[in-house]
Structure formats: C-alpha cells, structure tokens
Length: 334
Image 1 (tube, rainbow, N blue to C red):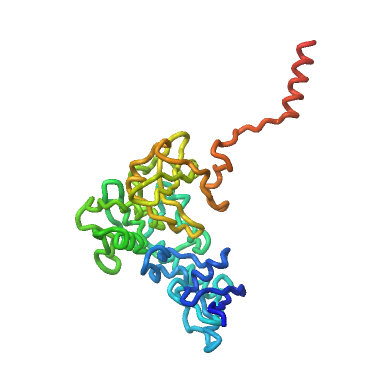
Image 2 (cartoon, rainbow, N blue to C red; image 1 turned 90 degrees about the horizontal axis):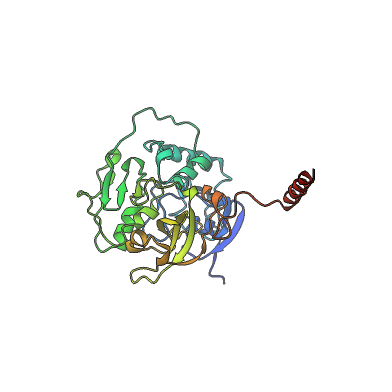
C-alpha cells in the first residue's frame, strides 16, 4: 500500500506525502498552476492564511467523500486528501476571486514603484500584473503612516505594508527576543516597535528578505541602484554565526548589496546574519562561486550573462572588419 496521497490539480496528477498542503503539492508540479502566495513562507512556522491570494477551488473533496468544498479555500492551509481534485487557473471563480483579493491588497498600497527599492523584485508587482484588475473601485483616501527607522539599518514604510506578518515570524523564530509586532486593530493595524530603532539583533536583516513588498528596506542600499542595473553573484565565506551563503549584488566593481539566496518560490534558502549582510561588502571578503540563477521572466535577467565578465556591448563582425580593411587599402592605393 502506497504511503503517498494522489491529488489532481488543474488536470495534472501528483503524489505527495500525507499532510502536504495543496500549495506545496502544486509547487511539486511547478509552472503556472502554482497559486501565488504573499504571506505563506515554508521556512517560517505558522505563516500563511492571511493574504488569501492562494485561494483555489476543491471540486472533489476525496475518494471517500467526492463532494466539492462549498467555498474557495486557502491552498497554503488546506491539506490534500486521497483523490482530491483542485482547480486553480482552470476555474473562472478562482480567477475572479483572486482579482478581487489583489484589488483589496492594493487599496492602501501607494503607487510609488518608480521610487521604491523593491521595484523589479516585488512579489506584489508580479501579482498585480498577472492577477490584478486595470482599475480599482476604491474611492476613499489611502491610510498613511510616517516612515520610521526600526533599526539602525532598516527603514519601515508602513504605507506599503500588506500585513503578511512574515517579518514578525522572522523576529519571533530567529531571535531570542522579538521586539516588534502588530499594533492596533482593523484599518489602524501596523507593524511597529513602540520604541524607534529598537531592533538590533544579529538576524534582523532577514526581515528585509522575507518582505514581499517594499515595506522594509535596506538603508545601506536605498536609492543606490535599480536591481536590473546590478549583477547578482553567488558567494560564501566562513561565518561563525550563519551559513555564510549569500548573493552579492555588483554594480561595476562595487558590492552595493548583500542578500540571502532565494529559491524558485522566492523564499530564502538559508537565513544570514547581519555581519554578512551589512558589514562584508568587499570582494576580498568572499569566495565567488559564479553568477546567480535568475528567472528569465525577471527584469533582473535583462542585464546578466553566463560569465562573470559582461560581454562587450558591440560585437565584433569579422566579415565587416575585413571589408573595411579592404576598402581602406583600396583608398590608400588611389
């Protein structure tokens, strides 16, 4: 008897371990049928179930009970059952609901992509482009907050926050003492510390990496460059605090940013310490492994190559050079 559970997602069958969520089952298949997720993070225990972008339709509950589930369910919180059938992009109901969820997420999110450091690697940008509507029905003023420093190297733009709670899980699970959380309720809810610049633990920088929008930004990188003008390179060092495996973001010969490496789901592979992130920004500090893997659909890939040294902008045309040389010789003779 197989210890796997068979589930069908958008007509594609996959066998997964019992207890696997629909979202992670879809990730094993990959491609367009993977529901988007703005709050779920596989590395953070308890995350998920807040943003509702991963809603799917369960058209068949299981072999034992083939009745469909009456409402759309959050795929990051719903576990699979034997014989379950799920619709994601094949369900007009899901597509329409997801469009409404994106509209809600954008109600208070300012349209400041041109000045946001997250532009080009923002999950909300991708979500709005792939699943959002062209216009919003919201006519009221957006809520606004003042920008604050919640650490000496981290700035919080609460106006952009979608309350995914990822940063609070990072602080709760990676550090000994969580110093920030959700303050207020309803429309007044916000990420805060009560005391400005209170966050000073050695893994606080990971809040920047897990934030799916531009709410938490690296003050050492702010306004230095657009990400599509940089070249990310995988590197490592012997670090006593963390794995030391990072991505170095080069602009010319200078390392202008250091981040943790991310997988195909845009999730951090291994969290890194603040020493690696903020204090080691020289090539001599690292062992260079090679160019980072970048999705071809990302704008970051537009300026990247297979080798560490960028190819020349103007390619040599040997046939044209020979013709030019021949013409020059003919001119000299006359």
